[in-house]
Amino acid sequence: MSTAGKVIKCKAAIAWEIKKPLSIEQIEVSPPKAHEVRIKILATGICRSDDHVISGAFAMPLPMVLGHEAAGVVESVGEGVTCVKPGDKVIPLFVPQCGKCSSCQSTKGNLCTANDLSSGQGLMPDGTCRFTCKGKSLHHFISTSTFTEYTVVHENAVVKIDDAAPLEKVCLVGCGFSTGYGAAVQTAKVEPGSTCAVFGLGGVGLSAVMGCKAAGASRIIGVDINKDKFPKAKELGATECVNPLDFKKPINEVLFDLTGGEGVDYSFEVIGRIDTMTAALASCHNNYGTSVIVGVPPSAAQISLDPMLLFTGRTWKGSVFGGWKSKDSVPKLVSDFMGKKFILDPLITHTMPFEKINEGFELLRSGKSIRTVLTF
Ligand code: COD
Ligand code: ZN
Ligand code: ZN
Image 1 (cartoon, rainbow, N blue to C red):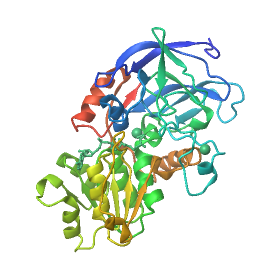
Image 2: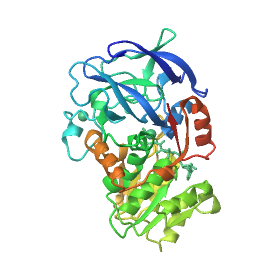
Image 3: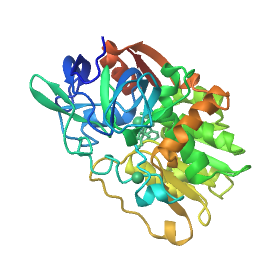
Image 4: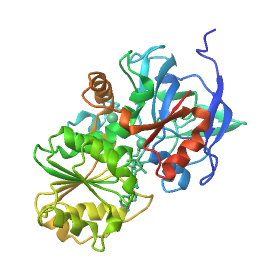
């Protein structure tokens, strides 16, 4: 019996309050309105940004259905939707691509103004919600909300992918992989032979390591306070790894020592801390070094730094979703994965049923997982 046009009752993990485990409950998911798509989620990864909301570091209106790194199948579409149809395999896009705003029209940007990362309203573009639980509306998370059996997204925030793609793997193209890999190949445009440093070797940082390697970097230095992350970083392309806790000097001085006093050509901050953002900037070549901020800074954080770090010529950039224009790039990245141009398996350390979501978060917090993929 078709569910199109009807309210669907299903399971979702709800963040009611910060610093509390998610609670799995039955919710009601409204049918998609015009230009919206209802998706049956089949696989979703747990990303640190979801945890940042739970910890309170990434302030969002609660209650909310978190999750943003996923893949699924279209269940039904609202009026006027032509980009996908029921049965299509899709990836939701936490950075939408409306095709009309200045960023979408420019070749230089990818942060479509229809995104909900900057404003964090937690609503559909029309200002309303499609989820309810016990009579209360639940907020949407960054245009996606994937910790649920069914979600509704705007047509600008979903794209069709290859029918043969394994959803429990390519869900990582929805965030972690693309964010890190793109920061290297797309935002920094790392050149062959260059020296790179990647601060933070979680799923996103390891993807940045893969991007540096794919771009032909000759030295890739991994930086992490958890040395258990080093073997995998080396397997994926890091030529050496350093633990800032092993040194008395600041890590930027350590990196200058390691590079004969030159600094690295490219550095990437993939942690989301302001102290490591300035350390990464100070680690790159004092004249032509480029440092890319990938980690989301804590809400309302401010940075103070010596302006000489920039005056001498360094470039400081940010990269959201790896600089990729989402609708254009996600299907291509999935095809590249199918064509074996990159691998995702080493990033997926755990796969578990959706019901074990809180266990998945514990693994991330304890540093034991890279990516946990939840299946439905
Ligand atoms: N110095 C060195 N390493 C550190 C330090 C430190 N002071 N503190 C933590 N680390 C290491 C941890 O040991 C860990 O290995 C790594 O940094 C962080 O990895 P994870 O696994 O916690 O996180 P990821 O890789 O899943 O994601 C990290 C981001 C910061 C990139 C992510 O949370 C984020 O902010 N994404 C970008 C912003 C964005 O676009 N958000 C929306 C969707 S993600
Ligand atoms: Zn993410
Ligand atoms: Zn746009």
